[in-house]
Amino acid sequence: MKSIKGILFIILIMTSGALLWYFATPIEPIHAVNRLSHIIGGMAITGFFLVFLLATRMKTFERWFHGLENVYFYHKYIAIFSLVLVIIHGQLQGLVPRLDKVERTSFSEFAKELGSLGQYGFIALILIALLAKFLKYEHWRIFHRLLLIPYAFGIYHAYFSSRYDLLQPTPLGIFTAITATIGFMSALYMLTMYQDMFFKYNGNITGIKKLGPNVIELELTLDKTIPYRHGQFIFIKILQDGIEKAPHPFSISGGDGKKVFISIKVLGDFTKKVYDSVQLNTPVTLDGPYGHFNFENESQRQVWIAGGIGITPFLSYLQSQPVDRIIELFYTYHGEDNAIYKEFLQEYAQTNQQFRVNFIDTAQMDRLSFKNFSVPAHTSIFMCGPEKMLKHFAKQLKSRNKDISINFEAFKFK
Image (cartoon, rainbow, N blue to C red; front, side):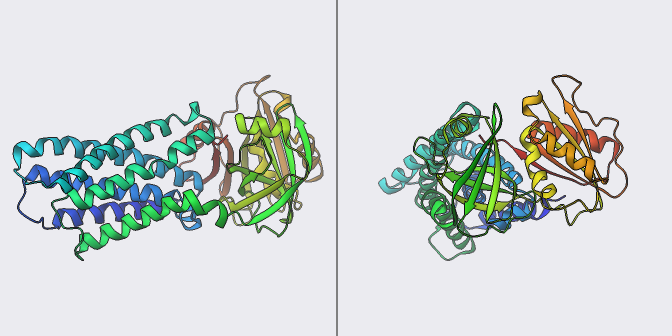
């Protein structure tokens, strides 16, 4: 399992938090339901610490989870899991007054009210985040950032409404202080510092080429070389009036690091604006590279599967050198207008005997299927395209080839 380090990290943190709450001693004896409520609430705060930490796009997490898309997968589902814990905690707290006579001060009552506000805030904002496909990306980002507010309320609630003294240097107090501080700083970092600290590659758009009615290729000339590996992607901010300033990810389709090319397909509001109005000499700034594709370190026999604009990470490798391994590419698209770089791939196959390409135009033929496809021994598989398509292909391939390893980059950003 390629995400094993990341999964173990999540299990370690969540289990540590649960055990520390379980074995901690309350200020005074409390009912078992109240104790359970504290444990569940503590796990929720720990879960949201992980949510904010994983959002920082640290390269370490990309390696541990084997890809940024896997980091976002666990980021999403830990948020949902933590929200469920928050709701359960709130329901249990509603039972406490009838079961556990605890004297409350105005200070602790205020903390309790903040906890309730935090719960409602988490519910509202996470539900909005789950509706991302119905929102503009910039609007989704704003709502996503607001999660810091209920998180702050939840931390205050934990410290000043809890029947455990978290301000003492006990194992639970130390763990809570560390995770709360790192979680809060991670959120602040993404809000205030990320775009200044990590977008360290600056340049300009020095070439624009429309490859079809909905795909555009941009040539970027940078002020210093970005050390990317073939198959990786970057986050780019296009600093032109009228174009959203939020960073978006795109695969590098070619270049030498000082000059790089990206190909953008119209998939949403941002990409449509870029296609229609981007101009030469527009400043850009980049963060990266990201991505775990590594064609050179895999086996000498490889199968590549690309869906639509998912052809781009393979191009940087093909355009850099003649292939020195056996590669078979399956390139699926809908309509000739979406078959970008088709002529290049055809010519490349004609001049490189070890490279073979299969074009599947779903507007004229059946959809690509690997249901009865047997993968030769010692073959590495790389896939890039829409997430739903890749999961479908992976399932088909593994049904006949149990032990194969599949590397893929799935895109959902717009």
